[in-house]
Structure formats: C-alpha cells, structure tokens
Length: 279
Image 1 (cartoon, one colour):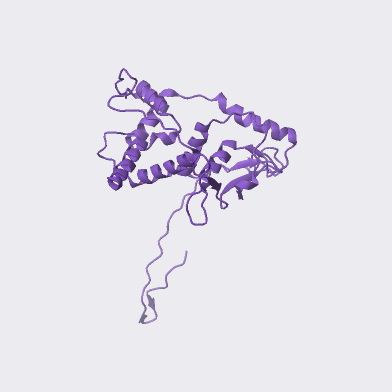
Image 2: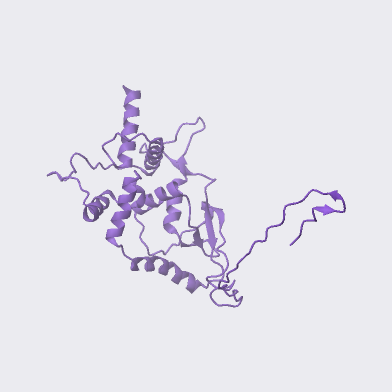
C-alpha cells in the first residue's frame, strides 16, 4: 500500500492526498479442469472429439454425389431443406471424401443445386425456352457451399459413415406434447410454420392433438373457411414462386389477415398486386 506524505513538512504546509483505502479481497478457489492430455484417444488433437472441424467454401460443381447412395431423397425433402437454407443460412457443411465424393449431405447438395439455378438467358436478355415451352435454367457459376473433407478415413469407414449418418437419425422420436408447445410458441410469434419442415396436415394434427387448436372440417375435406390449394410447377417455376413468396413475406403487413399461414398470406399479396397491374 502506498501511503500519502505527511500533511506538514517543517513549517511549510503541503497539499494532502487522500489516504489510500484498504480493500479486503477475498478469493475463492474453484476446481480447475485438468489440462487436455495431448495423446488422449478421444479428446486429443488427433482424436475424433479434439481440435476443430475445418471447412472451406467450394464450388458446387466440384462435388460429386455418391452413385450408390441407398437413401431415397424425395423432392419434398429437397424443397424443405432449400427453404431452410434460404431462411437460416448454410449451418452444416457437406462432408466429402478425398476424391470429393459426398459422404454426408446429399440433400443439402441437391437443395443447393436447386437454389443455384437461374434462368438461361439469350444474348438479348430474354429467357430461353425448351421445346415444351418451359424456361431453361443454368447453374450459377458463383455458387459455393461450405465443405469438410474427411481425410484419413479408409474406404470402408467412409462407406459405413455414410450409412450410419442416415440410419442413426431414425433412432430418435418426438415428445409430442413438447413439440406441440414449441409449434404453438412459433405460431403466437407469427412465425411461418412451413419453415419448420412439417406439412400443413401435420401441423393441423399436432396443434389439435397437443393444444386443442383446430379448424372445423367440411364434407369435402377443406378446413372451413380455409382451403388447401395444390399446384404443379416446373423446377424453374418453383424457384421463382419461392423467391416471390419470400419477398412478400419479408414485406409483412398481414396483421389484419384472418389467415395464420405465411405462404397463404404472401400468395394473396402477390395475387392482389398482379390483379392491380392486369386490371
């Protein structure tokens, strides 16, 4: 502790400095985690749980789907993953082997390919059409996705890893009451429930069974006063429609709508704008 000098020095008065305040400091000891042992088979830098997961952006065209992938990927799954990537970003890298063949992430790859499609334009800037009249598309050459190269695995390990990644997810199930409550929270926050990956019929059933939310059934199967409408679109058309729906949903302004479905409100907004132009 540094003490202030005396107030008096001989007969001359000196300015006094405030005395230092003595503060008692108490310390508590807490358990410190033992240092990581560098040769630990699990948590060491060379173990499966040690170190970082390196990934780097790579062109989509550099990746190769596995020709013998036994997992069947429906178009509906690709659409849902594409919507998820558009909404939340690419949060999980695609895993490839050292030959750039996909090990984990075929659905993310296909969804990214769908998002990377753009109209194929003629020299004058007009869309090129196929013989059947549908717009032709091309892959955006700037399209890149985060990729992790699984180095050091044997061919057998790569094959088994590919199967295990798909199989182990089937072991889990839903706690239905909690699932319904989570969906209910999102519903109250006016979040678009379509972006959870559940179909509208699943959402209706879950909200009814867990929270008692329901719409009365009509003899024709519709939910009065609501209707389910289904459209068949070409891939290029679907990409355009999804983009338009995203723009309309971000614009918002649906607070007075009796409908809680984000896609339905957005589609109505687009239709109203089109009618205003066409009339």
